[in-house]
Amino acid sequence: MRQPIKVAMGERLISCVAHTRRAFGHPLLRDLISLALLALCLSGFSGHALAARVAVVLSDDSAPYQEVYQVVRAFLDDSGHEAVRINARGLTPASLKATRLAVAVGVLAADALSGLPNPPPILAVLVPRAWYLKTGRSQLTDNGNRLASAIYIDQPIERQAALIRLAFPAARRVGVLLSANQSGLLGELQAAMGTQGLVLTNAILAKDEQLITPLENVLSEADLLLALPDPVVFNRNTAQSILLTSYRYRDPVLGYSRSLTRAGALLSLHSSPAEIGRQTAEWVSNALLGSMTRLPAPAHPAYFSISINEQVARSLGFTLPPEAELEKRLGSIR
Image (tube, rainbow, N blue to C red; front, top):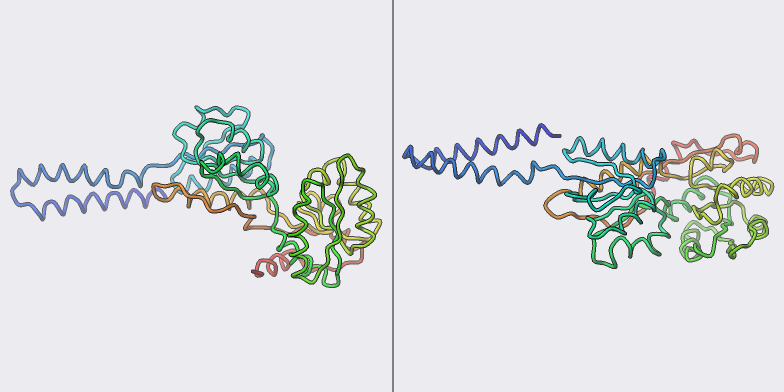
């Protein structure tokens, strides 16, 4: 992408000089004005040739965050901009010198950026929607005084409900277990399931409550369990127990990550770090067009994948369409 920019610059230079030679006949006057117009032409396109600096701040060095950075860097390298990787722990005001836009990859990176004085516009990615709406938005925008946006890690509930209908046409009741922090999602969940002819059965996990009893209450009524990225409910200490209990009740689990599919969810709807990175790169590239940095409103992932655990499907007696077919059919739903 850089070579066409240089070609365009050269064409504009030639055009400026040619226009001067046509317009002025006296050699001395022509030469003086040619120099002045040449300087003017150079200043006119220098803004287009100047690459923007984008700081990609990573919450840590784990593979998902690194993958987002690699995709963004590759995309921006082709567009003539510069992507600089910074670890959140080493972030300082000096790190953001001459930075036009900062990308926060993960919540820790977003917190680190929001804590600095006068940071540039911030795009937070791979962050939970609940976090952004509850605390992240006000922190990143400085209560509306700074430009910020987000690409959530969560899938839109409407997309999850549509997948349930595609994968489990006989299902009628969808179970969900939420922490008190996520209880605000109930209205959205009920509305989205209702559009697919599904009924939501739920339980709210009280603080310090053991999850087995509310989980079994949900599973005893539901045809399947919808897992949401709620760290109070699903974490490294509870995930295997939830999956095994669901299996015992013969209820399939719709998860939110490929790792949950491997662990025992029948299928999962998720966006990989590479897919989030692709969307991030597109947003950043568009944000840098022109002299003003612009960001779209916060949004769910545009790109997604479906993974199926075939062994669990056979054990529970389910026959599902292939992953690619489900992705295509789900992608066609608007």
